[in-house]
Image 1 (cartoon, rainbow, N blue to C red):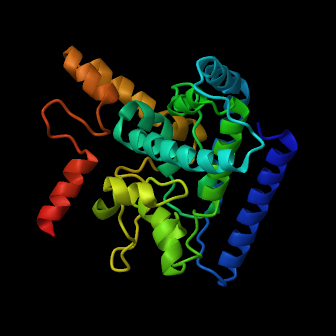
Image 2: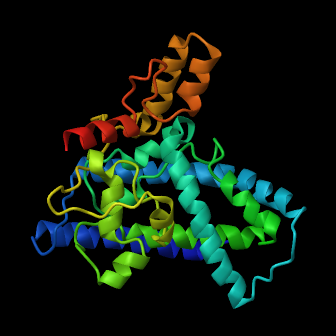
Image 3: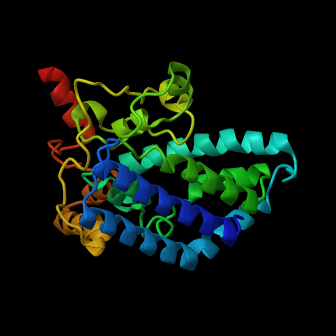
Length: 295
């Protein structure tokens, strides 16, 4: 498990990076747009995320430990090959966790707050969920414990993967060398992921490696003629962290109250965001299809 001193170092590095980007953006040295209340809302979300994780990490760790009782092998934490293998498998797992979090409303309700900012800067990276651990978004990693990776090793690799993604949330970096853009997740690719433009919806789920998006048909390159419009399809227009954290859960509760059958209940909870029983919902598939027809 990542030691507290290392976590503190990560936190200090992130705060310093946000302050530096905001200062350089204000001076016109780089492209970086900040709004004070938006940035404060993002940090408030991070504080709540840390508090929930401290309270709930025991559950996640216990789940990994329980799964490791049926492990297929003993994988040493000191072997370089084990860390290299875990890096690839963890990133593969992150891709599918992230994809499901956009395609299943139950997990989208936890993840949506990360996309709620209409700005795109390093502070956006710290806008993290309060309910993810509670609804089991850690469960896709259980199979790694079954393989034999120690829980501490899995959690450490998760932390490093997320730390890599921090620097992706910037407009200061336009394009990197072509081979880097092909192999790795970059600010350009992640700007696409945060775009609410029909072209960009539900694209570029990668954590570190872009191979998964390219292999599974979810890759989209950033188009200079269609700059990302950040935020949600329907923006919530609030800086209140409580509303940011729970607005989609409340919306889901309202839709469940209107459900008239078991099919509608299942669709509301586990269908894609925007699902409606009559097939006229504003899902990302419907939005992209309408856009493609117009295009």
